[in-house]
Length: 312
Length: 312
Image (cartoon, rainbow over all chains, first blue to last red; front, side, top):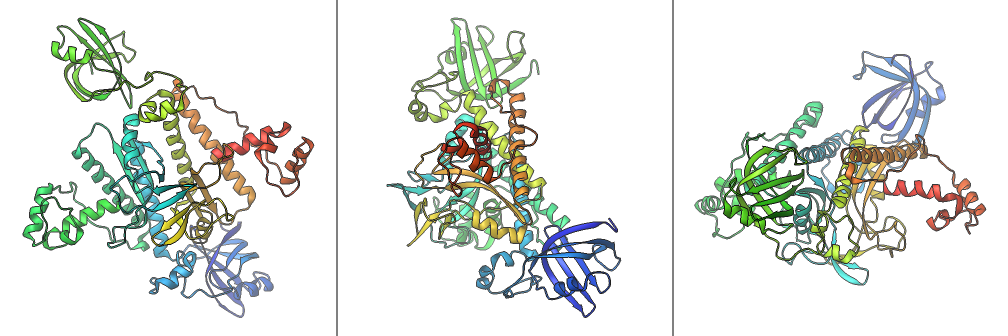
């Protein structure tokens, strides 16, 4: 593309320079583009305008591509025209290149700016990839995608932990799960899945509960619990492979990828209760497998898989 | 597969036969399977058990595949073992092969059975395909999939038409649209999309409003209204092509497919107001383009595209 005219749009990552030369790094969805405005190469007015722009300003640059050995991308742009869509009025409280920002409130106050940081870009983008890979698996396995009502008349799982809503002049609730709908729909479609929000008015005592979350839910007719475990194992592996692929293409993401054996170990409930009791947990047969108990001693590994299954 | 042993599971579409022979058609996700139980070919007890089963019962059959010129599938199954998962206790008020059932209440009372009818199977399945094709388009165009909160503190579009909820001990609302979130997220991700529920407490005066619906929403930075129209045109075409492909593979779906020109006509607001006024609608410049006005005379075609855009 050397010598060709291009228009690039994005936001400013850095501005450097002195008197006769300004370097601007423009960032967009696809990466960073160096803009080099040197006296004589471009209009003085443009160079001066560029040099006073602040990081995070949103601009368009028309210019000529010039191959450059110094630039990490292998090229730079010599600007011939500049348009400022929005100039920064207030400097954000952290640099766009900051790897970590300690104060969560500071971050949330300028969340869209916070989300421009590479670490967070990677989290959102890999999440998008993971969702795609899981849906592709469901499609490949001939599941029908469904969308079940989120405003419901009665609870689907127990009675507590429901958000009440005013449905016109009646009381209704937010769905905790697509459970009853998806079960019914297997009678018509055999294999169904839904990826959508669930709502649970639980006090958020653990890091596994949220008032609102996205659930990845499937239901299938003519299968037993072994088939269900196979599905979950497949989904965990597919999600992880999707993260591994992303990490390969984006080494700067610095993801820590857990190791998963080819066949994830399976335990019976009896075994786990016994394991927990031996590890000193006050668990009776019939109790839920609470993370607080699983955490004790030898059950950490089980908690790890349980979490993976939950988070997949 | 002639001669091989198979296990098939599904629900019974029809049972026919007399004394020495029973014909059962078993339907599953992938189609219909003829089971032929003839005296001498299979245990008497099994044949008798099969012959009294009612349509919609859920069963598993182990048997031998036998090629058959009479069967539409080219084969039938000679049963050697039968397992009944659930026998029908109450006969549904309509036949599984009924093309139309007039009473909507009758249908909704046994909705999972209603949804076994082919017409409805096709609607749900093509819907799943259309959603897939739209998402694939977004992924191809490098959009990031996002999920924005459905429980929000304030309205995103005007003040009315919100469902109020009890959020712990505060008042909150259900999101009418991901509007504000997706706009903010373009500052971080440039191109984002979300397919998820929206909630509008509007009285359902028109067939274009629902208390709860699935919205297909995208937002993009560095584009103008022409780019937006291009996106919508692409999404309409992709959705339609997905329906066309489905119809080709499922001729019994009998879909009526609208014709769409290569380039969908575009009108300015001024043009449309003038057109509507000429057609006798009481529209002033500044008014919304209400369907009731568009319906009059020459604007039917515009209404058609508007609806397509809405429904795509």
